[in-house]
Length: 365
Length: 165
Image (cartoon, each protein chain N blue to C red):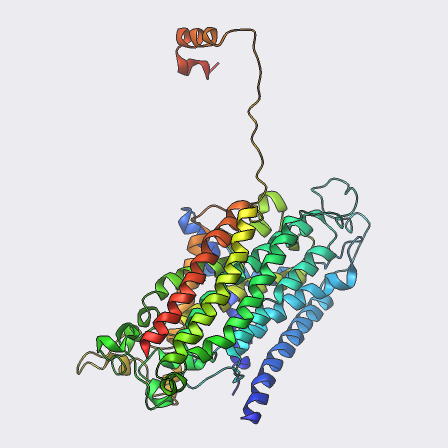
């Protein structure tokens, strides 16, 4: 069973509803109603938009480099979609078993920079070029804090395999490794064993208290990676029209938008897996109240699939909701602020956190 | 183990091929439905309705180039850090050396990261990380009328009244 069969239809339906949710959230934040006309409460609005996009002419400007222009959206989508290959979905439903795991994910997702640069350059439009350059500068800059925060998790978990990282954050770790033990805050010296308690106490964000800061940096970097506000300078409408996809139209443009929402889902899923306990339940076992076991099910059973998928996707959706909330709350940054934040604050901070995580890991043994 | 590795990357390949096939099919469906009526007006580059002047394939801000260079420095660092990360904290290696392994490996990496951080500090001190800010110049204008006169006028009219002329 491969996760491919789940992820492709899931991304498509998710995007349809995420676009709708985005517009509704924006509307409610701004005290409006949002789309109301198509379907009950505007629910079919995105489907109508999608049907319209399918019928739109696919215009390739005369001045553009035709081959590259047509190729770019495919590269962008493929690079991002390949990142989903390594994600586990539930305790029994792993993605790719390649040992490089999360390392591969970071590598393949950064390929979408090439797609964006191709799109912007081949359009031969000034808006597209500036948008692409900004986008690339931003994505590669924020890739460093993103990579370093992922590194912190890898150092604590001692594994690239996202499924193993998931198992470590819950009560089912002993089913994978009989000697496995979790301690509160990861410290054996404290002597409070949480292996059987599970719940949020074994989530990475609690297992290693500094991970709260790491998660914060990860979240900021992930916003910038997916070109979301307040880091949406590459497509700053007021100055750059649409950024690197100014010249795109019709369904080719829809593919670029699909990639953007797929990227949001990918970084949110990754954030949930790395920090927020992956498919593990947030409820701990308290004495005879086996809340963790009641809300997760033994790995391998179908109930475990249902609970696991439910928890992981709810966590990811929560993070996506926060991304949208941030987008409609904060104003856009200036280019110099963007670069200052990344190079002068986030990178030194994440380097420091990498070193502290190393020390913490040695204290954990 | 060998077999596992192969299927792992096989699945990644499946995702890559699947993505390409999906996009191709979607674009093909759109191609069957959509109209295709190009004309020279429609095919011009978008420049807010003006006739585009020149080509976009020209010069751009060299800052982007410098950022890309510094990025390579750190990306290579991350490439080296990742394999190290799963080795330095291995329980059996630490147990075999009575705890020496972990601290030694960590100290080595501290030095490596410190050298690279020095590179960042250099770029920082040299000002490569600063984006060129638009310099707001206050216009210098020497008026023959003394400043006190303006203030007198303002006071006579009441300071707020000057706005709603």
